[in-house]
Amino acid sequence: MKIQFLGATETVTGSKYLLTHEGMNILVDCGLFQGRKELRQRNWQKLPIDGKDIHAVILTHAHIDHSGYLPLLVKQGFKGKVYCTEATAELCKILLPDSGHLQEEYAEHVNRNQITSHKPAEPLYTELDAIKSLKNLVPCDFGKKYVLSNNNLSFQFNRAGHILGAAMTLVMFGHKSILFTGDIGRKDDPIMLPPVAVTAADYLVIESTYGDRLHRGPKAKNSIAKIINNTIERKGSVLIPAFAVGRSQMILYYIHELKRDGAIPDVPVYLDSPMAINATEIFHRFVKEHRLTPVQAEAVCSTASYVNSVEESKRLDYDETPKIIISASGMAAGGRVLHHLRVLAPDKANSVMFVGFQADGTLGDALVREKVRKIRLFRDFIPVRAEVHYLNNLSAHADYLELMEWLRNFDKAPSKTFVVHGEAAAAKTFQACIQEKFGWKTSVPSYLQEEELS
Figure 1 (cartoon, rainbow, N blue to C red):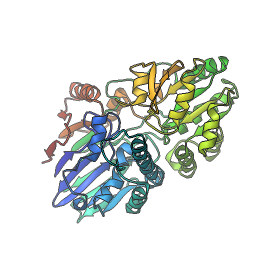
Figure 2: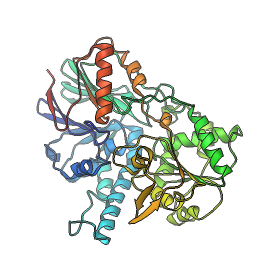
Figure 3: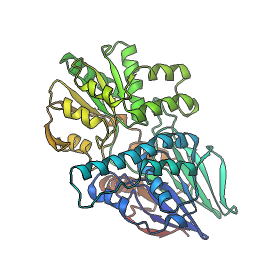
Figure 4: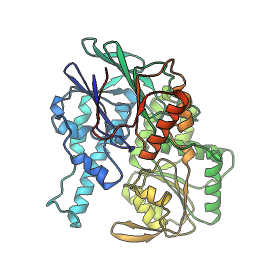
């Protein structure tokens, strides 16, 4: 068995791991690179293997940094099956076509404004390419063994928490195994079920998104209430950039509870993201994937008014009534949230509340970490006078102590542990934690690194 790291090395995006065993080529995750330009350019670079030579893809979950390269892989000639959980398949039906639409929209934008050296610029893939790729999806159950090659190669999904359908993937080859954690959720997440404890694997590929940070501080609900109350008292509005899958539903849950308890005013709440609306409906259908009862799920999902059309979205910005707007994308990297920022950011009465990880190079990262007070949107420079808040204790990723607690379930050390899916500092800090606490053999792989698994 050989593994090659095609993404998520010293960065949190582009998850792709190529396994080669007895003539079989298996890709675990098939994600897009996001964030900095030099990372996004990797999406255009040829993979070290042709799409037609990959026999199968296994997806840990539906987020674009784990699934978004799939339409391009199919476009490149991949004809195999894409194994994933049922909820992941349903979410991919929302996320992948939207990703294709955004690719087309961006290409049209740079061509119209003549800000490209390509004549014309082409999208990475189209909405139609994404729709075609959905035919390759094969839904699988948690806990069931699926054979890929004559019993010498098989895999099993175990629940990872994080979002609906998220799975750890245990790949078995001969008498050995390698576990890919995907993104690990949190044991005490108020909505998602906790990650399953795993006791053994010969090799381990583990995420480190928050490998150097703790989700500590005031309780998330209290922080949200304080920001909303202070903003509404100023007659302002709260804009919440939120990922369509996972964070949007979590925010609705907290706002529902705060309104129910009378902890915040009964101001209008708008979910302005067609993807998030569709994902919230899927939330109803997969009640076994989360902690809420059907009645609770209905109450949470009824907290907001759903905004579908562009015209409705535009009207929100010019309605001076204090309100809460939840809109994608969570890193302010595109989507309707940019239009809201253009109007709401210059007013000091308003607040912008980020509630998830902000990748290096994204607008969200610039606002949160660099604390910029002027941003460029649609070729205009926009002053940022609104209050900007960042709540990292709302993350769907385990922090480093939660990851370490999960690792304690292992009965013995893996032969080698690969630390991935984290910025360089986070990955190396978490690697040091594992070595110091457990004495395990660890590595932080580099981009395109290959490793023999004996």
